Length: 356
Image (tube, rainbow, N blue to C red; front, side):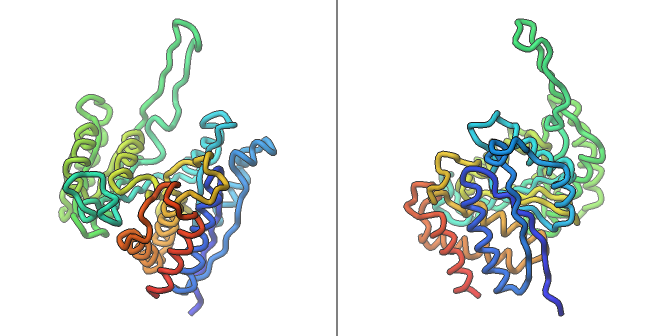
């Protein structure tokens, strides 16, 4: 049988991006040898540094070329020398919207008890996943500013929901709850009591839910959801939520699992090329210092492999990271841990080999 083979586009990006992606690629190389799949990568230079050097953002021709790949592995985008949002929108938003990556998937899972900031909670209490709709809502940037800089200035942003967009996110959440086979529950998070247009979420959730009699249905308004995530995080299995609220509650969730240093995400269109990234920023003050913790980028690599169908390889990475954290070999996720970025990558590689 021919070995499985994948094409991965790599955008290391800005700040610590190239350093953490380097370690993620090191881990992928190791696990590919253990698990028996082949892959090829093509690195793209796009990011703030490239923009400052060339004036080029992200050509449409490159995005078209990427459609021939299986996945995109992204580091981080952002540089204080560039107008906020300019490069991020040109690269990240272009990939999300033009490739129609309609699910932003954010696992909220704790690897070790010491990572949990909540009194009386342990790692077993933090294990749920958020399905954030990724291509609609306020992020469509429909609106604008009128009479800017004057006393009469008006700013307008439209919250856009479509039946197609809501339904496919909700259906993905139900299918995920079924495949996870853990709590077998989907919680809809909205604010339909105050934002009446969000009734479209309530109705579609109920309609689609009828097709999944084996899955428990729950609901929380977004403010209550934030409260319950802190009070009883163990009650959640799969959350489905609109774009802007999802952006907020997933960062809250990342703190439950130990911080940005272990949090990863997938931008997904099932069956098509999708993008995977750590959720932390580019942290330019640590650029080139070999101090940034790469575990979030390594977790993103694990998510990418799982999406590609390499479930055993993905689980091997997750197991290795968990053992390092629970065993105390990695005791601090910050850039002040005393461990170098490259050392942490080497530790994961070593653990993978020991476990194989």
